[in-house]
Image (cartoon, rainbow, N blue to C red; front, side):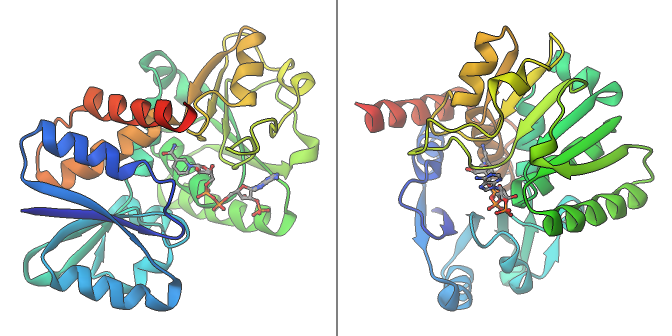
Length: 289
Ligand code: NAP
């Protein structure tokens, strides 16, 4: 029996169980994916319980993607780069490995024609939290030409800039890195705009991290990628689409990072993306009906 799960707090709205259980069923794998909602003072106890009870692996979500690292035996190279883990796997004798599939989930969701443009692209990213770290590592690993970070907190912004400069050196890249406060945002040169803040997420669906006027400055042909997956079409995406810009919802990243974690646990290359997408979309119908 393949025992899997997710740890975080809170977990009541997570779509991961529905997506993974649908995939396990489709693949005819005798297994289950459960939620483990845990407060920080119980995290170590839960980790030991999962390790000792034959669980193969688990996902890690807010707020433990960094905290979990101290319990792990090893990190993959990409998890080391981002210093955050969303996938833990137990190997022989309870040895644990931490990986980060948000990086590949973010990247694989991007349509191929945009992926090709990234080495010559200017990318603007809003936010400086956990998702922003994974997204920027994905962009650096794919040799983005220029990366502009906008956030509201100047201290976090300079910490993030230091992090990016250190990764740029480690990866021996020439990427141009700039940071600025969100109130100074200028999108006139952005080929790709990525929102990594929760602004616009359910229930605050009438909010957007940038105004329509700011979006109007984007070059035609640019792509607006919102990591939020609930709602599927955020105000940011709806406004961008009304201006004739290309849009991408966080749903696809959610599915791709899940598929990649499942691939690690099952050692199967091809996770059933269609089945996972359908399971997520059906849960949305359920939420909104
Ligand atoms: P996080 O670590 O808490 O970071 C959130 C970032 O957003 C911080 O920089 C925060 O700024 C900023 N922020 C929050 N409220 C803001 C506001 N009103 N105005 C401007 N900036 C604001 O969270 P996270 O893990 O990065 O997650 C962020 C979002 O990405 C969530 O909506 C999450 O659901 C989504 N996400 C999606 C996927 C996917 O698979 N699609 C994967 C990961 C995350 P301060 O530091 O100043 O508070």
